[in-house]
Amino acid sequence: MEKFKKQLPILTPLFIALVILHSLFVDYSVQFPDSFSSENSESAIQAMKPQVVSENGVLNRISYLESFLVELESRELPVDTEQEETKDNIKRVLVGQKLLLGLSLFYLLLSFSVAVSYVFRVWFHKVLANVFYPISFVFLLPKVFFQLNLMVQNEVFSYFYFVFLVCTYISSILSYRWILKNKELAEGFQALQFSSSLEEEGRSPSSTKTGSIFSPIFHVAIIILIGILIGNLIYIPLFLLQKHYVSEFSYFIFFLLGILSLFYIFNYKKVGGEPSINNWKNFAVSFAYLQFRFLRNSFWAMFSTVVIVLFVTFLFSLLLFNIDLIQNNLGLFGKSTEF
Image (tube, rainbow, N blue to C red; front, side):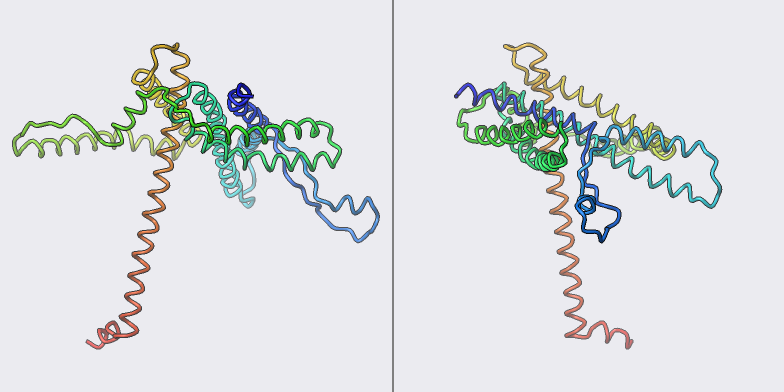
């Protein structure tokens, strides 16, 4: 039983990864009847029931929309067909599908990171589990109900997929419960935790040198000059690129993000790698740590944004309340118009 408890949290993310891969190619939706009939026959009643249908996944939808957009742009349509509005709508849908694909791929990689961090007992494996498993519960539950409806519609494949989804859902609950109840101290890759704590505390070698009064002015001038060069040589070309070449610019951004991620992974491996294990395992843990840092920074960014928005909203509400109070009770704004 103890061996099963240790192996299940490793296998469960792999099962969920298979479900994610399947959802990239096959998706399900509820199709409602186009019209309602007043007949009371069994066939008419059956036709009026909502049906669960399988459709193309996000990869096939992106491919179809891109090919349709290319075909639409290649045709010469009359002026009064509102072609530009149609293309803009398709582009917005395409952007949404690409964002969904990006989130799905990130979720797929997160399943790998959860399994790797648990195998090597890395100190942040419970944090990844607290993010991964609740999302998995929400992700798997609709798919279970879709397969249940397909079983009612006598779809043969749905029986096998339903059993697999139910087993995956139960194993997710058990794995998450056992991970949280495990009191063993996870001490793997402590060097990464030490470097992370130093970065959070803002520790850096402090300089004790005292410069002249012209040193800050020189630094400001250098910063302004570098800002002008970056704006003219990098920002403006990038702006023109994303304005006129949207698809190429998005691929370029993803390429830069990939290069930056590889840079961080190599640095994490160099700083916090364990000499007792091979390089591939160190790279795998470094990749998991990169996702951990991304999730943590994203959480703090969203939390800070929400706090700032609430604070600014509170200030404006307080200001409007004070203006109404002064205007209604003291009439200062009304008296000012007499002068």
